[in-house]
Image 1 (cartoon, one colour):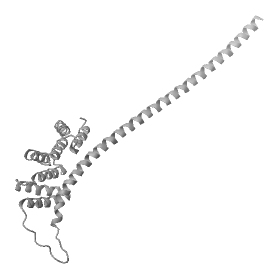
Image 2 (cartoon, helix red, strand yellow):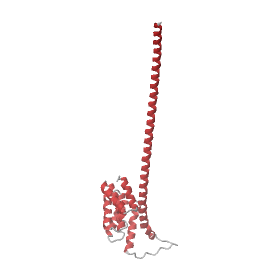
Image 3 (cartoon, one colour):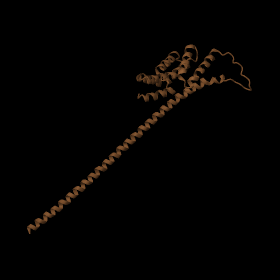
Image 4 (spheres, rainbow, N blue to C red):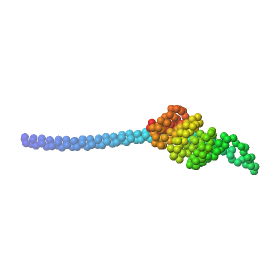
Length: 237
């Protein structure tokens, strides 16, 4: 009787042991599945955070480019206005032929108007993008018209010609000459901005930052100040 009871207990213990081992395996499988789910959730969160960061950086870059576009647009519009004014007198040079009659010969022009026409003729090359030829002609104009009221304009476009040719050292020297010799000219502030941009392209970052800050603080509200602000942001200053 005792032997039968012991045998029964051993069989029962074996069954319980088998059940416990199966339950343990089941728990381990469930834990493994949970770990996999946690890993997937963590990966999804990382991907989501990375996507948000990418979108934020893209939005920031778009805002920066928009500010730069606005500043460049203002600068371009100002140059177009200057060019339009300088080309206004070209209409007078077009032969006026009506009803087969030749226009009368022009009357002698005073020196100021002669300088104006000479400069307009030179600027034709600049407006066509012939910057090298324009630079040569503008240098001759500057040397031969030291007392002309249009000399500041000639110096400014001479500097722009060198700038467009990426001869930034020559452009800087030309803009500095304008600033030094014609401090009351309308081209003073545009030349000051272009000089600062020459410093930037020449790799003189500290000097460029100082020049842009002078424009920003000294001429608030102007298109040059807005461009200087954008340049400072691009330089990380």
